[in-house]
Image 1 (cartoon, rainbow, N blue to C red):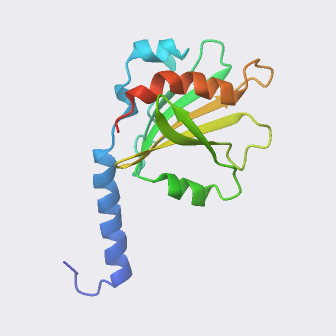
Image 2 (image 1 turned 45 degrees about the horizontal axis):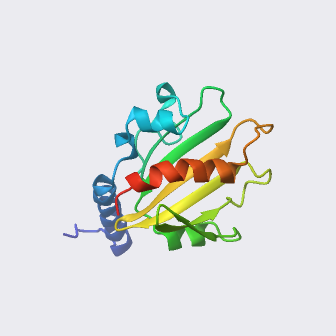
Length: 163
């Protein structure tokens, strides 16, 4: 209901925030992934966090991730209300390449800001938006390329992602 003096833009903005909050609550939570799975992909469960940039909650996203014992790679799994097409628009200029992992079609891309080639993102559609697996190479001398590391991780993680 519109309150006296409230303009239409304010009403839409308030409702959009409410809708984003409700949609975020409905997302699958990557923090439900068991420690045994994180260990299997080489992530130290003691390093896991669901914070996003130090903030507990950002509407539109749920995240869980950490790094390996040697601090060579950081790995994050995201669930978000944003679609694959939303990411294509956001990452204009990035090359999106089709991938199929565990019989699930998705895309891989390197974020536009990544000049050194240390990132690899894999994104898969979901009924509520999308899922992402992000690998960041923390140590430039690491032998395994981020793309190869992301595929290793995805082969284990993708079957766990809801359809």
